[in-house]
Amino acid sequence: MDTRGTTMANDREKLEQEIRELAQRGDTGGAVERALQGYGMEIMRLMASVLHNPELAKDAFSVFCESLLKGLPSFRWESSFRTWAYRLARNACYQLVHSPAARETPVSASGIPEASLRQRSDTRPWQRTSVKERFRALRESLEPDERMLLILRVDQRLAWTEVARVMWDSDEPVTSATLTRKATALRQQFQRIKAHLREMAIEQGLIEQEEQPSEPA
Image (cartoon, rainbow, N blue to C red; front, side):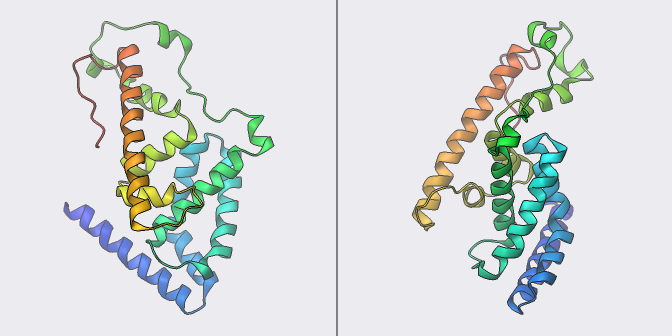
């Protein structure tokens, strides 16, 4: 880990300890306030990336804050606070996505013009100024659950067991064995998503057939 990464890890560890100490003293409001200071923007960015709708993201964040306040006193600290907060954020997003109002407004439009799907440029990919934006548009065309998985693993670099805790949607008790199974299934899904993105990128001429994907496993 580089120096910057080490500093971030140390800062996060300190933040986690501060939140836990406040919560264990019974200061739920103070713990929530500190959590939002430390993780609020991170959570908002995640919601914006998943929902693609500013109003839905605001509503989801309100649901998240309410869940945080209600749930913190019973949180058992079996994971990091950050992992648990991501789980609450995921649930808040999905609650909004599956609400009747949300279904009236598409939230996963790719933003890729139809012409760009039909045409290929002879220009090499690294010479195109819009390549990065088009890769981002490809990712944004995925379903919310798929985008969430990529964000957690690629952008936030959570370990697979942490990803499994965030994405846990079963009534089955969380044990070491069930967590491992869930992590394995998510890793397989992640590989399928990467393959799908690669196929779309080749289809649009963003990468050559022989080029290898750059996403981490």
